[in-house]
Length: 475
Image (cartoon, rainbow, N blue to C red; front, side, top):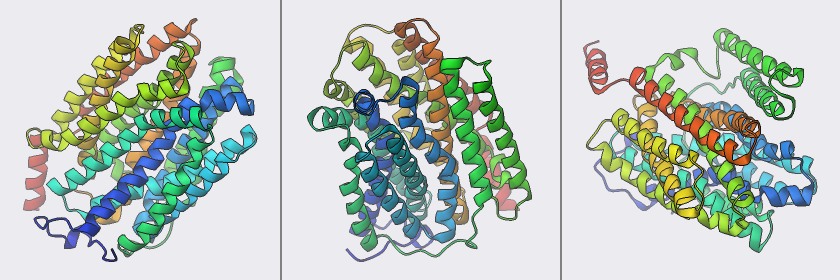
């Protein structure tokens, strides 16, 4: 296949998808699957990493956070780079960096080298992830086809989160924890070889200038906040060891806002965040990221630590979660034909809250203690993400598509890394593992309820959207 896919502005919505268009969707989905997989695939392998490399309990969190924080902090830069330098070039660069970092991580001989490789993985993921969504939103115009493509992208990406537990457990038990990273190398190579042939060479959407000071500020600020939050685990919230980095992080975010207001080429034009759809979906993404990153982490620790599961058994226990995410992610486009994105988002969140509340009860046994609440939580997540992306990306100009994709992904990663650090601290202060486990999921239910309030207050209703469209036409 040597043909390339035309951009959305040149596409004919009613024409059937050709083989090359399907191949591009597959590549975008594979790229998303790979970066999401690496958020969760190491969770089941964490005890094996600690035993072989000698991690401390607090240091072990940085196997997750080093990747998630770098991923989050640089994703805005990655999304903007796709707009300025071309989506094909940035996509293939991100895949290459990610695969190389995975190779280095799989060969790491001490904790420092593994964490450094995870940082480099985060860099590759930050370049790759927003570009996978941007390729789809610029290949297909607004409508059922774009919704279906986003749904497939969402279902595959969400399944990556759950499949990480299955694959991580299997690889750790049968081979080694190192293969949880090395598996990305052949996948990345296949994506690069195929992508060179089927992804269209696109023209940059603007002047090739990136806001490197802004990217450095936001990444450093988020890292400082996460580090301070992690240190509360050992030193408490009132300790200078925790308060100093927290204060520096907040100060860094303030300086970042000032820099963005002054620079002629901001990483994030602040006017973009005043749009109701962008602002609302960003807040909801932060909240959902905080919940679901922590969910995979604590379920893995609970099953292997409290229930005595082997890595493989714990991984297989996540299989219904993965299947639920895939099924409900594919169901979302059908539901969107009957209801608005905001209505589906709220309904899906209610389902997720039910799962969180049941999980907080810490019932013994697999069926009521893991399976049922997990299916409810994943059903809510699977149905919620497609309408969230639709709300965030509809009406976005091509020159901003990468940036909006970056904001959407970065907000989820920020919420995930900070949420994991904060909830791990909460769990550690509850006295017993069971009490901490219950508190984490109860807090998760509360955060999901907050996201419903945000959706009702910030996201536009159908009537508001119709009035805005009419005003745009009349003007």
